[in-house]
Amino acid sequence: DTGVSQDPRHKITKRGQNVTFRCDPISEHNRLYWYRQTLGQGPEFLTYFQNEAQLEKSRLLSDRFSAERPKGSFSTLEIQRTEQGDSAMYLCASSLNQGPQIGEELFFGEGSRLTVL
Amino acid sequence: GENVEQHPSTLSVQEGDSAVIKCTYSDSASNYFPWYKQELGKGPQLIIDIRSNVGEKKDQRIAVTLNKTAKHFSLHITETQPEDSAVYFCAASTKNDYKLSFGAGTTVTVRA
Image (cartoon, rainbow over all chains, first blue to last red; front, side):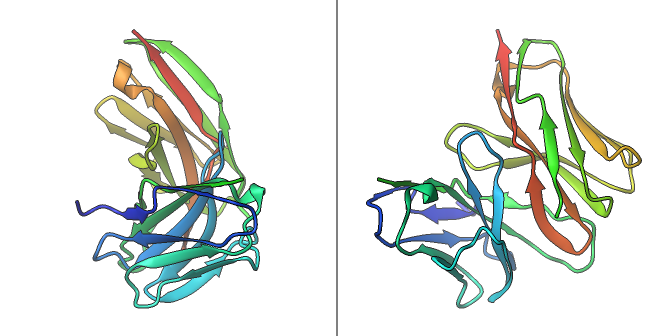
């Protein structure tokens, strides 16, 4: 399978615990995005990387959230001291940026569902 | 930032009928408008997109129209089939800012 893969698919944790999600993008893709999706809503942008550089972070990404893409390949999203409001689906997407153009297709993984008790 | 509104939130159609979903956007600099389909337990998947330099695009039973003046775009699905049942999201992005702003989604149910 050469699509975007995310791990774990489901995570149940207690409030106050730390969790980490991993995303493996499509191999030749240089851009990687994290989105959050709550029930009945569309995905909300959290952050994105161009290779290993984190270029933008949403105000939704509080200081309890940190994302890395150390070698420009896989990425991790860590949430510290989880709160019940963090319960959501965390989606990773990747794309191939080929220079200035109008729009580029994002390929999404199947998501990591977080439940904070 | 960009604000995308999507209507209706739910849509039930008889198999074989057409389905239309409408979206509006706020940022006149937006120039890329994709539509994603999300099935239960899966991530969104691109089904069609349109760029600001065209007004309409068609791919088999799916078509999208764009009205830049009114800042709205629509998805049309003709001859609907049960496998079209899913949640559909519209989205928009601006030039040189590739992050997408999504609508809240439309749950489409095709009745056999």
